[in-house]
Amino acid sequence: MAVVARAGRGGGGSPFSSALRSFFSYRIFVSAMFTLLFFATASVLFSSHPAHLSDDTSEIETTGRAYMHRTFLALKSDPLKTRLDLIHKQASDHIMLVNAYASYARKLKLEISKQLKMFDDMAQNFSDLGLKPTYRTALFESDEPVDEEILRQFEKEVKDKIKVARLMIAENKESYDNQLKIQKLKDTIFAVNELLVKAKKNGAFASLIAARSTPKSLHCLAMRLMGERIANPEKYRDEKPKPEFEDPLLYHYAIFSDNVIAVSVVVNSAVKNAEEPWKHVFHIVTDKMNLAAMKVWFKMRPVKGGAHVEVKAVEEFTFLNSSYVPVLRQLESANLQKVYLDNKADNETQDEKNMKSSGNTDTKHLSMLNHLKFYLPEMYPKLHRILFLDDDVVVQKDLTALWKVDLDNKVNGAVETCFGSFHRYAHYLNFSHPLIKDKFNPKACAWAFGMNIFDLDAWRRERLTDQYHYWQDLNEDQSLWKVGTLPPGLMTFYSTTKSLDKSWHVLGLGYNPSISMDEIKKAAVIHYNGNMKPWLDIAMNQFKELWTKYVDSEMEFVQMCNFGL
Ligand SMILES: *[C@@H]1O[C@H](CO)[C@@H](O)[C@H](O)[C@H]1NC(C)=O
Ligand SMILES: *[C@@H]1O[C@H](CO)[C@@H](O)[C@H](O)[C@H]1NC(C)=O
Ligand SMILES: *[C@@H]1O[C@H](CO)[C@@H](O)[C@H](O)[C@H]1NC(C)=O
Ligand SMILES: *[C@@H]1O[C@H](CO)[C@@H](O)[C@H](O)[C@H]1NC(C)=O
Image (cartoon, rainbow, N blue to C red):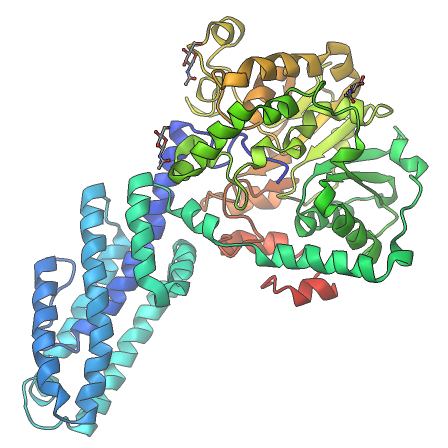
C-alpha cells in the first residue's frame, strides 16, 4: 500500500494515462478476441459451411444455424457424430461471443494489426481444410455413419494446424501475456463478456480484473505469522531499540506498508545488492493489524549481512493525532466519509478514482500510512537523510550514492515523470483555483513518489510539513485536488525538488508492458506502480521474475500460502 496516487501510477488522471489505459484494455481485448477467433475457427472447420470469420459476421451466424440443424440430425445417428456435435456446441457459443467482440472492435475503430492478418490466414487455412473434397463428402455431406479412418485423419490435420496456431501464439508471447489471463477465464468466458460490457462503459478492463482478484495469499501469510506469534509468545517478545536505528552515519530507509511479502522483497533486494549491508537500516511502519505479522516475519527470517530492521506501528507515533494531522481530522469528518462511500460504487474505474484503488480496499488513500511520508523529519528526529521506498519496488543496485548525491540545498531528490505535455502540474491540480494559479506553473514537471531521497535537515529548515498542512487543510472540500498523496506532494516540494537521473527509478512495471528490458536492467530501483502488482495473478509475466527472485520461497508460510511463484 503505502501509496495510492502518484505520478505514473497508470492512473494519474491525465490524458496520457487514460490513453495508456485504453491502449491496455485494447491489448487485452484483442488477445481475448484472438483466443475466441481460435475457438471459432476450430469450430468452423467442423461445420458444413466453412466461413471466413473476420470478413463478415453474418456468415458466422449462418454457420451457427447450419450447425443447429445438423445437431438435430446427429442426435439419432452415431456416437462419433454426437461427439463432433458436442465440440461444435461449445464452439458455437464462442462464435456468438466473437460476434460481440467484433462489434465492440468496430465501435472502438481499433486498428487491426499484422497479428490479426495472420490469424485471418489461419482461419482461412482451417476453412480450407473443411472444404477438402474427401472430408467434405465423407464427414459433412453424407448421412452415412462417419468413417472413423477419415475422421482420424481429419483430426490429425486439425491438430497439426492447431500446433501451428499455438506456435504463432508463442511467438507473440509478449503481447499475449494478457491473453494468458483471459485463457484462465475461459471456463467462465461469459462472465468475461459481462466484464467487457462494463469495461466498455468505463474503459478500464484491467482494474476490473484487479479488483476481483482477492489476494488470499497475503491474508493467509499474515494469519500464519500471527498464529506463530500466538503459539510462541516467549519467542517473540519485543526487543529494545538498537542504537543503530538513530545513528545518522548509517543509511536509513523508510518503508510504510501493510503488505508483509512486499516489504520483505524490498528489504531483501536492497540488502542483497548492498555492498556494506551492515550499514543499512530499514524503518518499517505498518498498521496495528499487521504489526505482529511483520515483526514475526523479520524474527523468523532475519535479514542477512548484518542489516538492521525496525518495525513499528503507525499508532506508536503518538504525535500524529487528529489535532495535529489534517488528514486524520478530515477522516473523522462525516462529510468526507460520505463522499468516499458514494464514490466507491460503480465509478471505481474512472480515471481519477483509479488512483486510489490499489487492489483491495478502496479507502487506502485515506489511511494514515499513505500520508506518513509527510512526517519523516518528526518521525526520525536524529537523522539527516532518509530514503523513502514504496512497497511495490525492487532494489537492483547498491543505493548508497543517494545519501551522498548533491541536492543543491533542496529537500526531495526524485525522478521526473513528465514528457511532452504529459504529467505536468496541470494534470494533478485544479488550476481554476486562484490559490493554485497564483502559486504554481501549470507546465511544471511532475515527479514520482516511490523512491525519494529526503534531506531531513533542509525539510525542517524550510518547514515543509507546515506547507503540507496548509494545502491539506485547504483541500477539505477536495477543490484543489481529488485524491492521493502526489498532488499535495507536488505542492509541498514545488521548489524544493531536485531531479535525479532517471536510471535511479524506473516506473510503470505495474501497467506499462512496453518498458524496455534494457532500461529495466540498468535501473537501480524498479517500481510496479499500477494495478498489476507482482504479487497478484494479473502481474505481467515478463516483469514478474524480477520481483519473485527476491521472495523468500523457502519460508514455510510462503509455501503454504500458494503464492504461485
Ligand atoms: C496457410 O496455408 C498456406 C499453404 O499451406 C501456408 O503457406 C501458410 O503459411 C498458412 N498460414 C498459416 C497462418 O498457417
Ligand atoms: C497531539 O499531538 C501534539 C503534538 O504533535 C500534542 O501537543 C497534543 O497534546 C496532542 N493532542 C492530543 C489530544 O493527544
Ligand atoms: C458516479 O459518480 C457520479 C458523480 O461523480 C454520481 O452522480 C453517480 O451516481 C455515480 N454512479 C454510481 C453508480 O455510483
Ligand atoms: C476548482 O476550483 C474552482 C475555484 O475554487 C472551483 O469552483 C471548482 O469547483 C474546482 N474544481 C473542481 C473539480 O473541484
